[in-house]
Every structure is written in C-alpha cells, then in structure tokens.
Image (cartoon, rainbow, N blue to C red; front, side, top):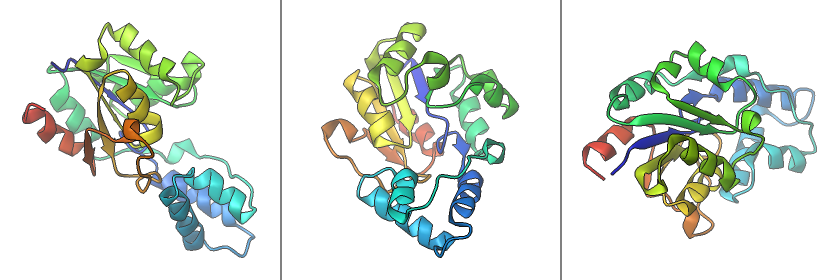
Length: 206
C-alpha cells in the first residue's frame, strides 16, 4: 500500500528549461560553438550516460557558467497533480537543491501540498547517496515498500530508491531525458513524459 509519494524538484516539479537556455548561452558566449551545437553535445553526453552539462563543458574546453535559479518555474501542471494527490497520499520532496528549498516551493505555490522536504544542502548529503533517502523515510515514518520516488534521473532518483524497496517513476524531461539504465537498479518501475501520467498509474492501483 502506497502511503508516501516523494518528488525530485528540478525537471520533475520545476521547469528548468529557461535557466538552462541562459546557462548554455553564457557558456558558449565568445566561443566558436553555437548554442545548438552545445545542446547537441549535451545530448551526446546524455546518450553515453555522462553528465550532460558538466562533461560537455570539459569536452568543449569551455568554462562553467552561473546558474540562474530565478528563471526556474513550476510546470503548469505541477500544482494540479499535487492537489489531486493531496489527501490521498502524503507528499514529500527528496532533492539535490541549494539552501532555501522550502521557501522556493512556497513561492511556487506548491509547499501547501508537501509535508516533508529533504534537501541536500540542508541535510549535508547529496543524491545518489542512499542516506538522503533513508533520512526521508525515517522522518516520514514510512517503509520503502510504502513509498514512491518520482524523478528525472535513473542514477540519482531511481537507483537509490529501488535499493530501499521504493517504487520508482522516471520522468523523461530535462537534460537527463536521454540517459539510459546502466544496471538493474536504474531500471524504473514506470517511465512517464510528465508527472501528469502519475495520476493514471496510481488510479490503476499499481
């Protein structure tokens, strides 16, 4: 019986595409590499299960650009999905995020549906470290088999959650959408294009 549903933040509840456009544009500025060429390089890295941006920067010989979190915004359907799950399940967040995750979720209008926020900056441990997930389950007083993890990365979200017996849903959006499982733990129970599809999965009683 599912009691808790945990979500990642970036490219799961929150659309980072504008922030990535700014970062990529700033990264290639002054170089002979175009924005589209850099995005193609990122996709190539993702297909090889590398870290899309970080490895594209290394391969191209460019420098990392600043991240503009002010350009992040919730997906248009995020609040609707959370509102439909609210009351039927407890909702939590397990995410690699800088300090202030709770305040950002409040700004987005999502915090009122979320009972527990476990963020790497506040907890001092980052995904895919299984301890972040263990801490979330402990604080939720929930067993792994009674929880679902929803995120965009098979390495950071799916694998550690599966090792704790959680059900897993991989959302194929954002810069990691082309990553593929490298081992059995990275194979999600379900794969979706957006979290809207989660409603049908849960409705069918899976």
